Image (cartoon, rainbow, N blue to C red):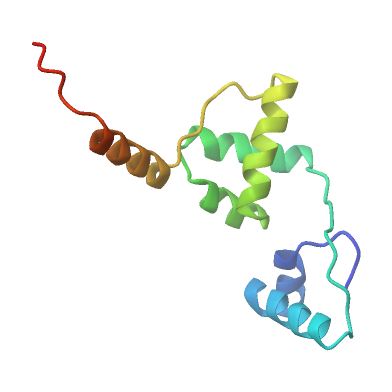
Length: 115
């Protein structure tokens, strides 16, 4: 495996799917033939621009992660990093989370009788 390549890039080079690369590496790790370690890949300017553009288009974190070959958690973490840098000032509410939160709020709120 080349250093600095994402699973998606490696899959493309080998004409395989990203999940097949992840599965193979996981299997090799279980056989002690490879070590799984967290690889920190710095974000490129191009990735940040894609991220911001997809955010503006209303794409989900999952869609952004798939487009960039990163994990959903990395997308959420990077949003916080950009917010701290003053580059991102939006608030992201994933539709599934918002719907769940809103339905939970309705279930816990009771009418006060005022009106």
